[in-house]
Length: 161
Length: 102
Image 1: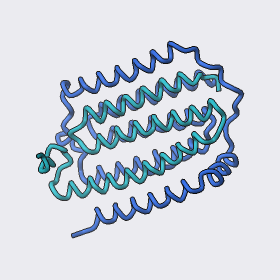
Image 2: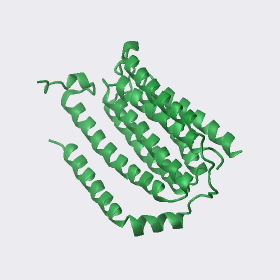
Image 3: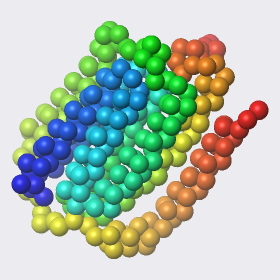
C-alpha cells in the first residue's frame, strides 16, 4: 500500500516538475511547482518525516512560492510575449546532462541489490527537537545569523533611491 | 516503509537533473533559473530524508530543515536582486546585463 502510494506520488512529482520547466508562462510554472511540492511533502511523510513534510508545505509551497508569485506579478512578467521560450537547440545540452545523471544513477542501482529497509516507524517531533537543540544548537544560531544577513541584504537591495 | 532506498535515490536524481535542465535551458531568464535551483534543492532534501529513513536517525531530517532555512535566505536575496535589476533596466533577461564582459 505504502509502496503504491510512493510510486504514484513520485509520478505526480515528476510530471509536475516536467510541466513546470516547460511552461510557457512563469505563473503557470509556479502553480505546477506547488503541485509537485505537495506531492513531495507526502513522500516526506511516507519516509517518516512528518515535521519536514509540514515545513515543506508551510515554507516551500506556502512562503517561497508565494514570494515568487508576488515578485512575478509585481514585475508583470507573466505576459507570454515577454517570456521568450528557449529554442529547441537550447534544450540539447540540458537533455544530455539529464541523460548522464539519470543513466549513472540507474547503473548504480542496477549493479547492487538494495538493502532491506530496517524496521523504522518515523521520527517523532520530540526526537527531532532533542537532536536539533542538543547536538546542533550552534547550527541553529548560525542559521539565525544567516537569515538576519539575508534580511539586511534584501532591505539594502530593495530601498528606494 | 517498504520502498527501497535506491528508488528514492533514483527519484531524487531525476528531480535534480530536471532542475539542472531547467537552469541550463532557461539561462536567459533569471526567474526560471531560480525555479530550477529550487527544484535541485528539493531533490537534495529528498536524498537527506531518504537516508534518514534508511538508517533511522534524525540527522538527515535536520539537514533538510537547515536546507530550507538556507533556501529561504537565498530566495529572498535573489528576488530582491531581481527587483533591483528590473528597476534598473526594465528586464529580467540575462543578456541585457552583459556590461561586465571582459
